[in-house]
Length: 101
Image (cartoon, rainbow, N blue to C red; front, side, top):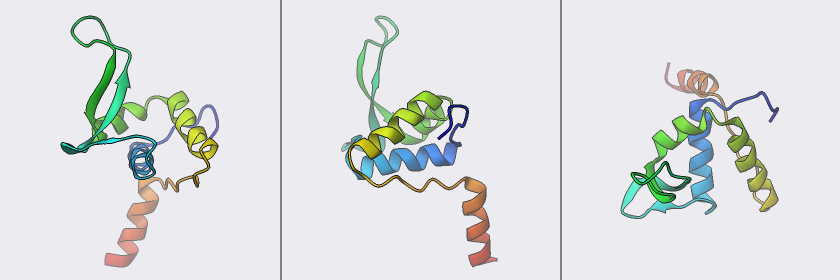
């Protein structure tokens, strides 16, 4: 992934789902649509620590964080896992249209 290249929302969502599937991030067992994320905090209202966040919201945030995207992809390879396929949504949509239309 080039320094300037950013993943799209759909790719970020698929990346987070893959990370959860291989155990590098954890889903919240009480709220299956949530993952645990670490936040630096912003004062007393939200102190530093682990929070449960909806995976769709986390993907939206990750979409605008290219350095974090790169770090997550590098971590996957460093831990010996296969690099995930992260097709762009337009590619997936065209493939679906071929099947159903």
